[in-house]
Length: 278
Image (cartoon, rainbow, N blue to C red; front, side, top):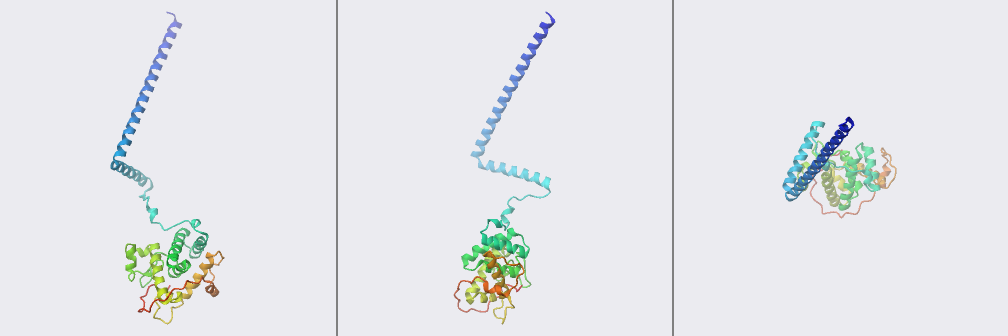
């Protein structure tokens, strides 16, 4: 046999070998993928029939991912922490509420997102209790300057400086007295107390005097004037007027939005002090 014939035979043999190897590889791969597909189908069917196994698998996967995040970041992630945050985007509020939220944010140097949530809550609670929302926010401003962790020397706590130990019954509806430091809970309880005092005295000024604990005193030390002046500013801001942050004009009080008439309740005993004068 010539050399050329030998090379041709060797080439045909190599071609046959490569073809057999490739065919075997593709057949093996095909069978392997088919096996993987069968395994996946079986696992999906099993997890569908056994929710408890699916839950365990999800839990273990979450734990594994959490452990990797802790190792990489050095902190323990808590994906549901956002649910505890009192915050909202001011741009998502109606224009009137957004005006108020942004003005308060600038004046009191607090973040606009938590303020936006408080403004929205004040409007909701205020409309339900027939109180001007800007009055509620004005009380908040004078009492705590929008600090949800504020506490006075006499024990008034939270945004609206409610005397927690006196109004424990009201906080029971929110899980207990520590709810005084939850912004929304404090706002609701403070609004309830303010509404009761306005109704009892028949006027906003009288209600504010009771709210600050000066019902039996000749003067409230200017507390009502401070609240009503801030109320007037916020009312005008809500209507889109440009009010300087440091405007202390006494004429603003006359521009405050009138409160709806509230029938006075029968006279009661001397009120218990609710909030300390800021």
